[in-house]
Amino acid sequence: MSLLRRSRVAALALLIFLPACRDGSEPVAVPTPSFTLGSGTTPSATFGDPTGGTFDGVPFTKGLESPGWQATAGTLVAQARIAPFAAGRLYAFVGVAQYLAVQRAEASAGGTHVKGGVAGNGIRRGGRSRLETDRGAVAGASAVVLTYLFPGQAAALEEMVTAQANTGPGQPHPAFAAGEAIGRAVGAEIVTRAQTDGWDNPFTGTIPVGAGFWISNTSPPTVAGGQLPGVRPWFLTSASQFRSAPPPAFGSPAFQAGLAEIRAISDTRTAAQVQIAAFWAQGTGTPTTPAFWIQVATAGINAHGLSEREATHLYALLSATMADAQVGCWDAKQTYWFIRPWQADAAITVVAAVGKPNHPSYPSGHSCVSSSAAEVLSAYFPEQRAELDAMVIEAGLSRMYGGIHYRFDIEAGQQLGRSVAQFSIAADRSGHSVLTPNDD
Image (cartoon, rainbow, N blue to C red; front, side, top):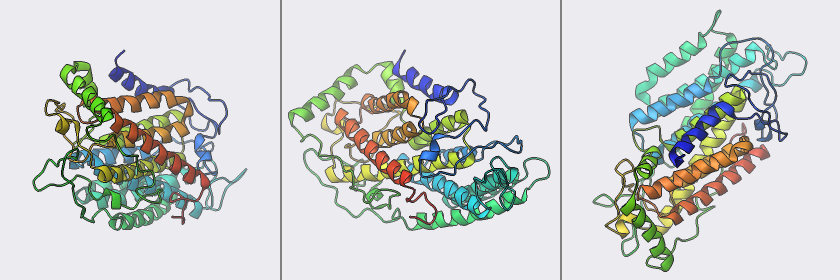
């Protein structure tokens, strides 16, 4: 079976057959895709959120709202042709807003884990009010953040909120309206962060010139994502916290070996390698690489039957970690300014579907993001680590097949991404992080 097909099969397996993990105990196989809510606790209880639970009270037919809003974000990113290096930041705003909104709405409503009874407004484990509180919080937060990011879609986004509020008989439920109001307030706070996170500060550095340095695609020279090292991270203490060690010196035996490998691939590139490069390109005009991994998370959420709180927790941790990995990656890129393979050897061709990114080669941004995502997902679904790691490996190879990265770019990116994720996971598990209400 080809690597491309194995990757797609792995994604399908995540969608259908993810086993349910119970706080570190033995995994329980999910027998069918139609997982029934209320089957037990989930891995998210170990990630700074001891109040996670599942619905086991009032029957309901409406599922989670957060996956739909995540998918909407992906569609809007693709339609607006947001560049991959910029898209990761946007997904983090949506994910974090959703999770903080759900936490704050549940706390305002009287709690989330009331044993044997009902909190002040009727919320209990599985109660209709909790369901509506969570749905409203997600809708309100998502609409405010996405409207800020895509103002031309404001009317359509508000129509989504209205439609969700009126789902089912006797709607809108008062708890939905209360949750929505809280969600909108949280969304406004995230918008304030977005306006002041440093993204709008122009790149003011100097792009070096000379042997071994990357050459900009534009004249005058520019660097895509040049402002990223100055963007405020979610978990990292600084952009340079996990900066990669220097790449092989230009012209050294290690460099020449790495360059020769890409030249050999270019000279003998197979149709299967072109397919793999195109599959993982995920460039401008698509939802981009962060959205791919968010879709994998959605598969796990659906298979496990996670609650809204648990789902938004995963989305928030995953998207914020990927955003931080990108910040750290660009810090390293703009430290070493390393030459791209096709610039070092004019005989190297680039797969058209991949294109020639206008930023330095080392380390690989795709690998930084993918490895950080797989690390978070493996922490939630440890029994899937082998499959997730295989996808990261293929994603890295795809950039070599495409002619745009050396192997050492990929390896450095994977190490940086894993380091960022491990730090983010530890911060989240502490219960004192940016994902904890009133603690940033």
